[in-house]
Length: 640
Image 1 (cartoon, one colour):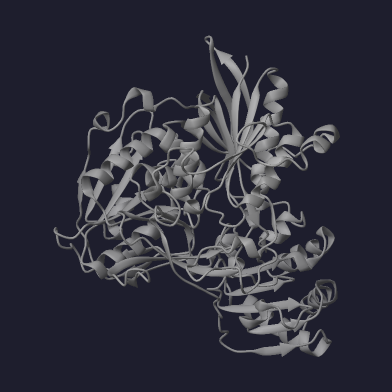
Image 2: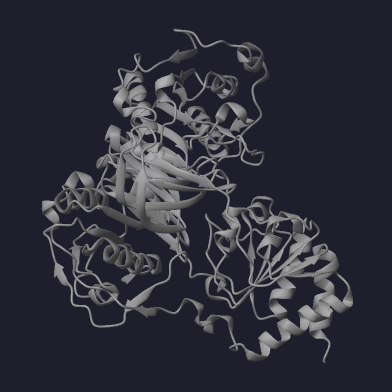
């Protein structure tokens, strides 16, 4: 069996080296002013393609990238690693594209190449972390999609080629089977990249893009693209503003690593332990509160819609958090709040988990094959429901499911989508080019560019305005007064066809959450500044002494100091609201602060007195982890 494979790759700015000229006046990335690299997840996708080529002799790999002319650098790397043909898609008309406009251009290029057996790309790019382009391309090409794939093989079943893949899902993995052709997004850990081929390196390292040959260059005209759907002009989402946030601490106390100063901290922690519940799981910081809801909105105003994710008959926490935010937004707009739940045998089981959050209308699609989750049936239902109800806002959790489903639906609806929002607000927007004023838009606020900035995104002209939000960012709150909503049970067969059920989940391995990080009243978190896995063990000892939980920054996870990825705190990890947050060797990037900014009291341990984390710390201890933490442990273990 031979395979025709296309690899989508991106040359990305190195987000570790961002200066004041990183963004243009329009809020787009100034890529020409930044150092660049081969996006790590895309490099893993390329390696996976080379692995398939070895297993299936005679297979071919075409590599495609869109970007500035210098993006040819990663195409040359692809050629000397074993790619057969590489194509650079570059044109001024493509500049400033959001993910939807990018996916349109890439899909047009793929059509020109010819629909392959497999399209491979990285799960996400480090400059955006949206994970949207792959699913959006799949929708535009009508391909089955598998996202967050850790490993894959291609085999034959009943004489037809199929893909057997292991996918990463929240809390574990699942084994799936999909027909070809399909689009697959690959996790960065899926396939370590092999050394390059020295002979091919000498052949291609100075190759220049040509109209023909192994390294080609195409423009908008070559792929017959509609320029109205390309670049900035074809991007539904616009950047309203880009800013740095200065979080202010409630009080400020600068301390040294002296015994006297650390004794003050030890007394503070001891007082908390004496007043705190006996276990971290009893912390009340995540218990649902209650809010007043204004009630049913005007039928003339488009509703707010929330997708309620299901897991083992339960509505996910993040969905209930979004219902609370959705109710707030709907009240602000004078609109109805609507919700949708999709699954097998869920009728009369989920209504009371959703309606008390102020939902005016709940749509329950209960039918065979809808659990466990697969993309196409859920995407088809969501897209058609949106086509019927025309919501002005649609919200999903930024879970594995939400990041798989949201981009596909946004592509089907030709709507913009903003991933991993930390705040949602309503406000006005003035288009700088036309001076047109838009009222009551959804402000979709998220850390961007590796957490170095915060961007406010708007979607002026396309509906719905779509956003995904991480679990724990919002707070779930029931309506303070009884709120009676209606429930609609549509006929599932009117929304999906048998061909939509083309991915089979063979097995799932999901473990219960091994920690109580999200609910802990004390969190001891470590960053890259901890220095080593051995030093990280000191944090575990301190957390144990305080009956707390250990957390980590993304940099500490990537460095291997903390192998438990479910302990990552921040925009792409867990959001925590502890009573005390002890940040050890954490610089304080916005991306991390987004996951802990609601901590009641922050203690920083950092050798750098100017570290951004000290700007939000109530107590800033100048010192190293190996110097400070052993002293704190000794003081905590010494009877007063």
